[in-house]
Each structure stands twice: as C-alpha cells, then as structure tokens.
Length: 170
Image 1 (cartoon, rainbow, N blue to C red):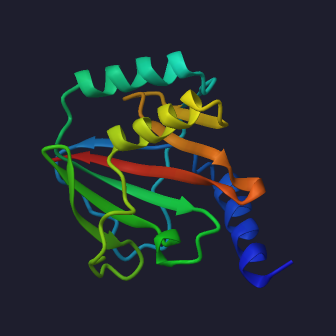
Image 2 (cartoon, one colour):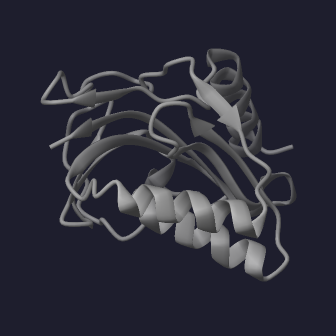
C-alpha cells in the first residue's frame, strides 16, 4: 500500500467522521473560509439513490433555482496524484467557474478546468449513470444540491469523490 493511497484513505475516513457529506448555505457575503484546512459542514442531509431519474430531477430543480452566482467549498478525492485534491473555494459567475482559491493557503489556483460548477457535477453524475456506472450521492436538506457525490468507483481507482461545503450566493 503506497503512502499516497494510505493518506487518501485517512482523508476519506476523517471526512466521513466529520460528516463532510453535508453543506451549509448562506445568503450574502459571510466569511469566505479561506485560511482553513477543511470544509465548513452542516448536519441536514438526505441520502439519494443515485438513479438516473433522481439525478435528472435534482439537476432540473437546481437549475430552476437560478443560482448562477455563488461560492462553494469543494474537496475532490481521486487517485489522480495532483493538487486538485486540496480543498478549495470555487467562485461561479453566470454559471461559469471564474476563480478558485486553496482553502488552507488562501492562494489563487491558476488552473480552473478540474473544478466543476454544481450543474457540472450533476452532468458528470448523469453521464456516468447513463453509461451504467456507479453513482452515490447525498444531498443538502436545504437547497438539494449534492454535498457528497461519488462518480465511478473510488475504491477501484476509477472514480472521483466530490465533497461540497458552505455555499454562499453572490
């Protein structure tokens, strides 16, 4: 077992124990969370089935809310061996990722392409399910956005786990 693999397993265990499959939502400009090593978490979650119809319905509900400008904390876990596994704050304007900051260092991230919007997360999950792949999801109780989304099978080194924290509308 490699050190990187052990570290990822420890990270996943810690996130699970912290209840990181949850999210908080704020309307307005509260503290950004920059300079903190982990996601802000809440406790109101709803387990999903990960079915194609559920994902499509939840995506439609999210899009109908019209929240196109927001910041959301995001952590990506995968066996991809890069800096994208560091928790970040993603800023979305008009439905497009425009800025990303490392949550711990508060430094801007220069490559934005690995970081999806919430709609993009739904799209990835829907595409995976459409191919017959594995999707596991937990939603926030308030907005119904995915706060824990596994697309593919992380345990087989063939998936990605997305954890979303605090969402702030801009």
